[in-house]
Structures are given as C-alpha cells and as structure tokens.
Amino acid sequence: MAMKKWIRTSVLVAALIVPSSAAFAEEGNTVANFTERTFGFTSIDEGLVANSTLFRFDSGFTFTYPDAIRGVYVTGHSAGGERFNSLLNLMDTTDLNAMVIDIKDDFGDLTYVPADDSPLKPLNIGNSYIKDPQAMLKVLEEKQVYPIARVVVFKDSELAKAKPELSFVEGSEVWKNGRGESFVNPFMKEVWDHNVAIAIEAAKMGFQEIQFDYVRFPEGFENRENELTYSMGDYENSELDSVQRRVQAVTDFVVYAREQLKPYDVKVSVDIFGYTATLPEAPGIGQNFGKISENVDVISSMIYPSHWTSYFGIAKPDLEPYRLVKEYALMENAKMAELENPPISRPWLQDFTASYLGSGNYLKYGAAEVEAQIRALNEAGIKEYLLWNAGNKYSPGVDYTP
Image (cartoon, rainbow, N blue to C red; front, side, top):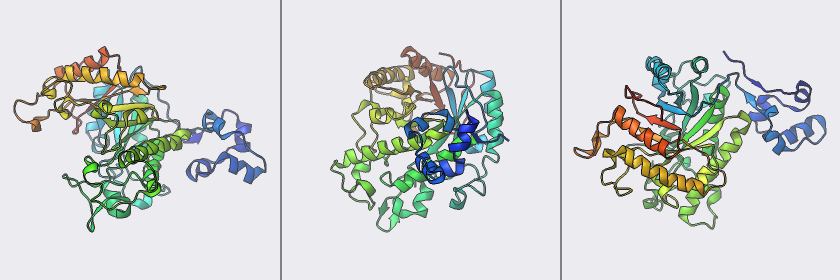
C-alpha cells in the first residue's frame, strides 16, 4: 500500500512550519494562523504556499500525464469486479490510456467503503463495489493508466433523502424528476462541502484528477423554480436575476472546489452539456461554458450525437457522427479562443447505440462510428477525448489514434 505524505523539498523548513496533513488540509487551518499560534511569528505569504510544491500532499503514487488523454468511463461495479481485467486489457492492447472511475455515483453513493477514521464514514453512503481502492490504483500505476475520479455533484438522491432542507421540496416530499432522481441545491454551501470532502478523499487515494459531473440545476428548472420550496442561501439577497443567480452559484462551486483541491495537486475537470457551448448560458441549469471553462483545468463537453436534436443544420445527428462532432468542435474552438486561459478540451464521445430514438433515427454504433468522432475532433485540433458506454462494453476493433 502506498504511503501518504506531504512533499518536503526542505526537511528543515518543513519541520519548522508545515502542520500535519490532518491539521492543515482537513481542518481548514491556514499556514498563517498555524505559525502565528504555534511559533509566534507571521508566516510566508499564503499565495506562495498555495503555488509551492512544498505544501502539496503526496499520495505515494506516480503517474505521468500521457501525450493526450484517451479514456473510458468505468463504473464502481466494473472497477471492483471482473470487468476491470478486460478493461485493463483494452488499455494494454490499444492506445487508450485513462479511466474515469465512479467514486461518487449518480445516486449519491460512494463506490468504496471509507476508512473508520474518514470524515465520510458516518454518512453511511459507502458501498464495497471497489473493495480496495489502493490496490486498484497500484495496478493502474504499474500499467500507467491515468486515473480520474468521477464525482457526481448535484444529482444526489441519498443526500436529498437524508437532508431535504438541502434539496428541492414539492409539497411535503423531496422533488423527483421523471426518472425518480432527486437533486440537491447548488445554492447551499453545505452541499459544496459535502462534495469537496469526497473529492479530497479521492485525491488522497491517488487519483490524479477529479472530474465533477452534474454540476448544474435539474433540467428544466426554469419551469419549476417558483413551484418548489428551497433555500437560496447566501444568494437570497443577490441583485442578479434568477438565471444569473443559478449561473453564479454553479460557477462559484467550481471556483471553490478547485481552490480547496489545490494542496492535493490534482487537475479539476467538469462535465458540461454540449449545447451549453452554443448559448450565452443554459438558462435553467446554470451552466455557462466560458465561466466554467475559465476555472477548470479540463472541460469535457458531452457531445454524443444521439443527444442533439436538429442542430447545426443536421436533421438526424445520430446518423452523422462525423459531421455533428466536426460542427461542434469548430464552434467550441471559437468559444475557447475568446478565453484568456482556455482549459484542455476533452469531450465525451458516444460508444453506445441509441435505439431509443426509434427506427430511422439512429445508427448501430461500432468501430466506424467511434473512429468518425475521433477523426472529427483531431481535424479540429482536439487531441483528447473520453468514451461513454454506461455498461463499460466498448466497441472492438477501434483505431484510437487520430
């Protein structure tokens, strides 16, 4: 098992001014109040501390960022079950090099059981899908498969059930969407802290990147915002209109989470609806492509052809994966060019068949359709991508090189 430690580039300096990881990273103590309280002198500038490797947590694992991330989605069941070996074989025999692994899933559950001394243990949301995360990460380290922890944020039926005051209430019950799922309230900082705590634990395990998903209000929220009961927290007295309040809350969460994760030396990525890049902002869900992109290391637009209606002049996008992705990539490139510090673009691509669209509206997706999407990205200068298949069964025979 890898030994966790704080990096010490100077043992003497570290011994004098660096608190333990528990005192510094988990209890929220700043270097300033630690040194003043303990040693009676004013510390060095905290901005310098935040950007120095001297104060970075080291999980004990060593991963090298690949030439470009080419990854797949992996559920907790797959990561902890027999399918993990077949996915490793896929990495070994192709140019794929990364896994996005569920740590907090779409229901709000953890895919592993926290240690007894973990602050997450009393929440009783742990499941033993991944029985030994450290052993799993050790295998990934040996094979140099880049590990990304997926944390589903505001879609969280477990937290909504446990604390309705952090959710949206309809009548006397927590509101559920048409699929029976509940969301928690992006206006509430307690919700932010819940997810950041999970992200920090994943970073301490050894994951190299935290990917936040469902960083948004429920779809169509603008149609029910006045029907549901919920708190606006610190945004109650905001002078912004309702759309901009939602945008501000979602963006503020991303900024906050990235700041809290700085000591753990991980990249921060966010999944976002593809259509968000086509609008000034998505009015109901609070996603603004530019504002989120400015505050992450990686942006992952979900551009599955099946998820678009008649966009870019394409009547049936699922039938034209190359054209859909090409048109999207050109538009995203233009949006990125407007940003001062654009993040890495790493879109989600489709490796599943959307038969639910009905006869004549979908293709059976396989190697040709996956390769068409990769080629379209590459021609637009986008070298990184992730493949989505909910069952983690990826098409055989795909050439994953551009």
